[in-house]
Image 1 (cartoon, helix red, strand yellow):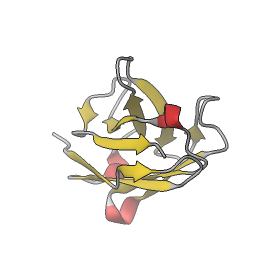
Image 2 (cartoon, helix red, strand yellow):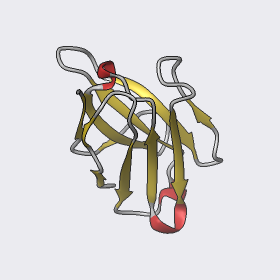
Image 3 (spheres, rainbow, N blue to C red):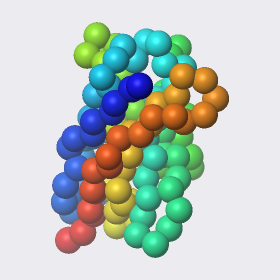
Length: 116
């Protein structure tokens, strides 16, 4: 079982930046991919960034160019650097991991609020 712990959420003004961390309880090199999802108020959870074991990254158009996901295998940690934040980025952000095809492991979530 893999446990994921997020940190770094908070309140930021529009146009600002924020970084999220996700640390796993086991070596992330054994996971096929890790990613970040978010769930805005009253909406469904959506994928915002994915990084594979080989370092491939992918983003939806809504965050492309503003969000960057990275990983540090030595620290069992992935990061989400967010810039140019908009009010519509307000959501609970979840770290996720998978060993195969399914996203089997989830963090508890961290709140990101973009507001003036």
